[in-house]
Structure formats: C-alpha cells, structure tokens
Amino acid sequence: QFENYQKQSYRNRCYIYGANGKQCLVIPIKKQGLKTPVTEAEIDYRYGWQKIHLKSIESAYMLSAFYEYYTDDFRKFYEKEYRFLFTLNMELLQLILSLMDIHNDPETTKSWESIPINYIDYRQSIHPKARLALPDDDFNPQPYQQVFQERYGFIPNLSVIDLLFNEGPLAAEVLKKSVKSNE
Image 1 (cartoon, rainbow, N blue to C red):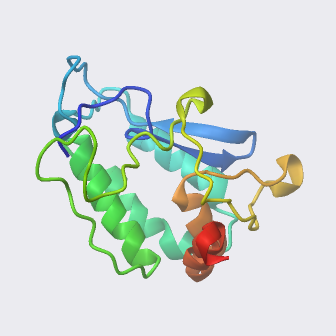
Image 2: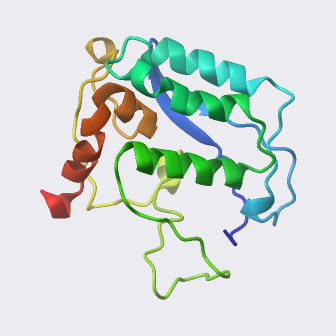
C-alpha cells in the first residue's frame, strides 16, 4: 500500500475473453502526479466505464456455466462509486478469495520497502506489457473450458472472473494445478 501508482499496469485493468478474443477492461484514473501513492489513485467516473464493463462481462460470459451464479457478486462493484482504486481492488480481492473458498487474509505493508525482507515481492512479476513482466517459472496456467475457446483456442492469464464464470467451484483447483510446486 505504500508504493506509487503505476500507469498501464494491472492495478487498474484486466483482460477477459470476449466474442472477438482478448478484451481489455480499464478503470480510468484521474490525472495523478509522478509519485502518487497507490492508495490515493482516484477513480474517474466521467466516462461511464462501469456500464461498459458490465455489458462487456455480460456479453463475454452470459453463456458460461457459472455466470448466473456469480454475476450478482460482481455487479455490486459496478453499482457503487469507490473514490480510490486501492479500496476497490482490496474489496474485489476479498470477494474473489471468498468465492474460491481460499482462506487467506491478505496483509498490506506497514511501510515502503524497496526490497522486502520478510515477503516475496510480486509487484513487478506480472505486467500487461510482456517486455516488462518478469517470468514466473513456478506458474504454468492450466487450460480449462472457456466460452469462445472454439474460435480462438485457450487464452491463459485472463482475469480471475474468466476462471470463476467458466469453472465455478473448481476454479481454485485449476489455480492449484497451475502452480508447479503443487503438480
């Protein structure tokens, strides 16, 4: 929670599997200074992104096996206006852990650490720009059934909602099988 907000990162975007392939959903952020703390990045509601996201998610997943089971859980995030992106992300994380029956209480940092001593640092391990992402040799995404798979094949590393809407209660098992140390 003490890092600076990073533009064009997964902090405000994700990818889903739409009818035309991989589709990016971005939460617009109000103009920030160069060293804006991530907890102070404010969401910009001028562009109607909530309706766009909801329509995109519905179009992409309404035919998936578990869409109707989970859609209301996510809809509330698109009906409420959060001031800060960090707050939205933390509440989404709590929901996802709960839906996947993962009993883990994420902890936020107590201060800035350029190189964390007691934690594994994942801040730069994934990034939407492939050239900036660090390889993770311990993670190998396992294929699962996706709605538009017959058109474009399996697309790995999408938003966790893709996994939840397609696999439902088995989503956590797919993730566990994707971690090489658990194979």
